Amino acid sequence: MAFVKATKKKSKARVALLGPSGAGKTFSALAIGKHLGSKIAVIDTERGSASKYADDVAVFDVCELETFEPQKYIDKLHEAAAEGYDVIIVDSLSHAWMGGGGILDQKDKKGGNGFDAWRTLTPQHNALVEAILAYPGHVIATMRSKMEYVQEKGANGKTVIRKVGMAPVQRDGMEYEFDVIGELDVDHCLHVTKSRCNALADQMIRKPGADLAKALLAWLDQGEAVAAPVVVAPPPSGNASSSGDGEKQSPKKLPPSMTAVLDLAEAICAAQDADVLSWAMDTIEAVCGDSEKLPGRLKALIEERAAQLADAEWAGSENEKKGAAWLRAEIEKRTEQAKAAA
Image (cartoon, rainbow, N blue to C red):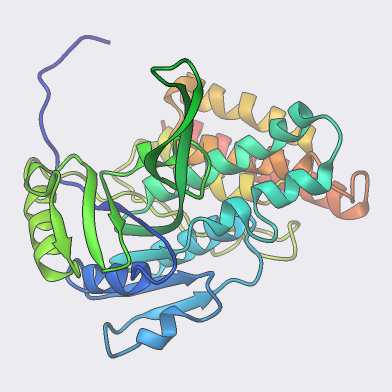
């Protein structure tokens, strides 16, 4: 692929707010979010804390999670996208890492060889990151913070402990996924520690809200307009052998082969056979041409389903057989449709 002139495109916010307890992460997320869009949803992992700000700070809809498997976050992001929420607030993203059902909790329960555990846990984390980045609206995520220290050799040759700042309670590197990151202190002052928006770089903002949102929107609105992302509805729950009638169709303006691939995402979600996933990938590549060109959304779906299937308790069960047969039929049907339309 040849180099081309870089051009800025309009985009949606990806903001992370870090801070200790009492810093105002939830309040700030709502205060910023209500100025980014009019329809707000909150994924609440903090036992209803967001709802205590209902109407006083912002008007929003909420879903309160009780366990914090990454897939549950992903499902709620998909639901919010399908329902057209302008802004989704994830409060808090830390629980997907260290909460009950989160990555570390799953690792502890697996025991044994750590490498084997991470082989199935890393795809879950990656799929959550992909779902956040693929969300068609603005995303604000809060994360708990911890003080980070390093050991160094002092001038006298002795080892000393040096404080290097705050680190989010999440997997290392999560901060790279956001456009703007701010650290809130106990006085509710936000220090912008990372920003791709020059107007916000290195700013200190007390009780962030409308002004921050205004600067962010001005930056996000610069550049060329981009086509609205295709939202694939979440899979039917409970019965993977359903016929697939009434599935959400992709816009007709897409090439037939790409339409087939995007529609297949729903089928992939419902796969119940690891071998079928591998077979499905081969079939999709035949339709699309090259796995490297597959939409990130679809690749993430395959990864997350593969991770879930690694610990499937129903392997060889009747449900697995039905799910495999259904998925094969769905793929074959769409493949034939794409070939006929091409």
